Structure formats: C-alpha cells, structure tokens
Length: 176
Ligand code: GRF
Image (tube, rainbow, N blue to C red):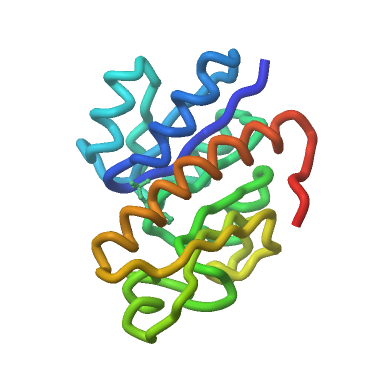
C-alpha cells in the first residue's frame, strides 16, 4: 500500500483533486499543513483524511517520525531546505510554464506580461524555488480576463496533478 503526504497551506483544491482521484485506488493520503485551520484542513476532514498541523520549524522533526512514498507540495507556501528534502522525493505544482514566472502570482505575471500562452508545470523540488527538473508541463491559451485565465489554469492543475502523482506512485515517470 502506497502512502503519500500532501503539503498545503491554504485553499487545498489540488489536495482535494488528488485525494478524490487516489483514495478510491487504495492510496493512503495524509495532509501536512503549517497553517492550522486552513481550508485544506476542512477539506481533509470532509474527505476523512488525517491532517497534521506542523509548524514550519518542526517539519524535519515530523518527517523523522514517519515514512511516506512521495511528498506532494500543493500550495505549500514555504521553501523547504535540504535538511527536509533529504527525507524522500518531493514534487510541486506551479501555475506557469517554468522557467517563466517563478514565485508568487505566476498567472497574473504571465497575464500582465501579455503572454498568449500560459500553463502548469509539475516538477521535482530542489532547494531553489520552482527550479527542479520538470516532470510534465501543459499549456493553455490566455483568456480575455485574468479571472477566466486563472480558472482555466486551476482546472488544468486539477486534471494534471492527480494523474501525475498516480503515475509516479506506479513507478512510471510521465514523459517530458
Ligand atoms: C496552485 O495554483 C498551485 O499551482 C500553487 O498554489 C496554488 C494552490 O492552490 N503552487 P490550491 O491550494 O491547491 O487550491
């Protein structure tokens, strides 16, 4: 039985999409958050997923005590140091066509820059923010408004991430 730990700090829509896709397949899922009571925690409760509130400074301590097959960052608003990343394979989702538009407000950055294409990247996590090897990247056309573009990007995230996490757990690395 495979077991994953999803890291989220806020809304948790990607966490929910992954859980809804993988729980029925028998994958065990737990949530780690650095923000007690965040909306992701409420989603976890509704889904029957165990959640752990772990203040950022205690992350390494927590990971020493438990073993997971994969660590999945989904809106976790912290930069993990090498001392934490040594515990396993960490992946992240970022709403841009990396290496373009790293960091915060990536969709808005692309929209404001007048891009005609934007998208989503799933990548391995390294100490450098949004810079690890890309596992899969998909693009969509920028829509007339920022709100529509954001909504399409999030829809794409919810399609891509559960599928990719499932493939990684099956030992398959999705094609680049
Ligand atoms: C997503 O856009 C993800 O790409 C980025 O943070 C956002 C998290 O959204 N890393 P949610 O909390 O999963 O709804």
